[in-house]
Length: 362
Image 1 (cartoon, helix red, strand yellow):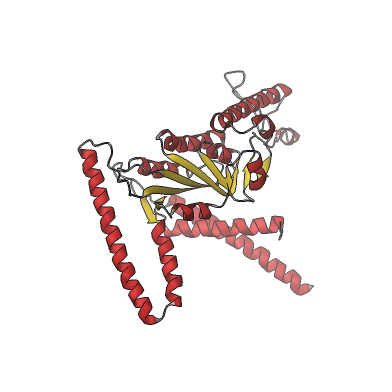
Image 2 (cartoon, one colour):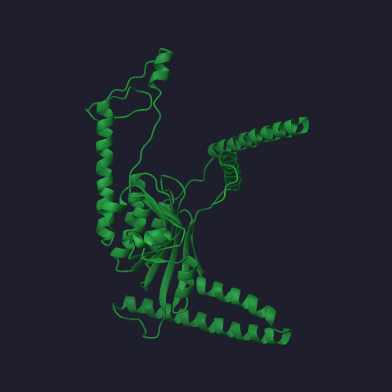
């Protein structure tokens, strides 16, 4: 028992040491002089990966193991020639398209030319949808391309957040649809609340069998410390110009009138959410699904919240059969100190989650 006590004490001390290190690193990162940004030079850069080539590399790696050395060498030479020929074809297509655009031609697509599909990722891991700025740049890059893509696939993962933040993210996806390009949203894990508001913009939604979908509702919660402050004779004054400039507050006194107004605003937001879903997914019975509930993919299909059950991997791999598929990602430079702080913070978050929830299984 004494050994277990000492072990627990050591783990607790180590835990707090790690937390202190994280805070120190974050503080250092915030006070270090930042590089001045020139307005004509965009921060970050675009990374494009050819998905078809990635699958071919995987196939080559498996096939080579099954070949004898001489056969493997011949296969590599043949593959190298094919790749060089494909690269030349792509260069010729790009030059022809650019020339046609300069000359004002409207139709430069060959009958046997493959379609182009672009894959984007949106990971809404925060309630402010911070990755919307990355999404905005990625969509702009796709839309300004000389040859218009036939489809854009967005792998979406989000449990929602602020109304205005996810409304902006949804408006970015609308740019694709309004450009006349097919938009597919793939949900492998979760698209709930604001995440589902983004998804409904798509021409089609695919979901994994156990992906969490729905939560067409609005929620708000906040603590109120007014009685605690009163106990210690601390006054907190809220001054406003306008009857409803403030409704519920954390430190002030909340009245029934405040609560009624706050609930009224939430109902208005909920109605806007329902109207948005109805506009872009007419097949959904909003009256029965806008309850704030979530459903797994298979049940969501029955409710017409999604169009088919499959993972994004299945869909993209199938698209590679008759299309050239490219992953597009906007990448921001990360300083080593910030990267270390982020990793430590993620480790602490994971540890806290484990301590809170324990080891659970579905």
